[in-house]
Image (cartoon, rainbow, N blue to C red; front, side, top):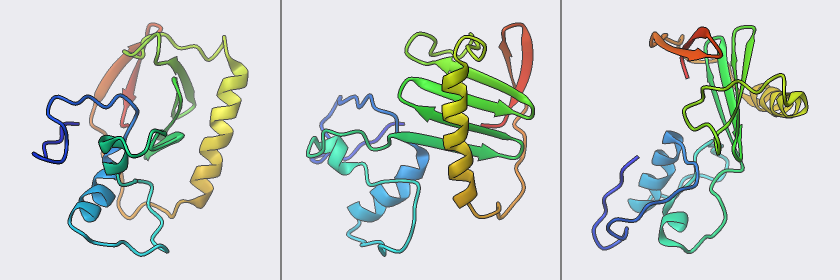
Length: 149
């Protein structure tokens, strides 16, 4: 993601913590002086405190995605993707390209992330529109997967 806001965001700044496109709405709303109602539950957050350095914590402890039969969760350097019946676990610190599935090596992490994902999904309303596959094919451990996330 690239943001440009002269006089507000320092030129050339690189922010390395994970953020989501869902952060854009609360960030732009705050920048425009719009106070969103507290009862409005959003997955995104206003990124300006993080980009300005006034907040040194991470904007998200955990990030979640869901698209049709595919879903994913990221916690720290770990990312679990569930594609239909298949589970893919990646250590993004050592495998940013998501090429080495670690499901068999870390079953406890798979269970922890899957439990977190299930708890999140229980809070979600049904999708307002069906998902559309983007036909992106990814080779993981010799198996070709179509990801919609």
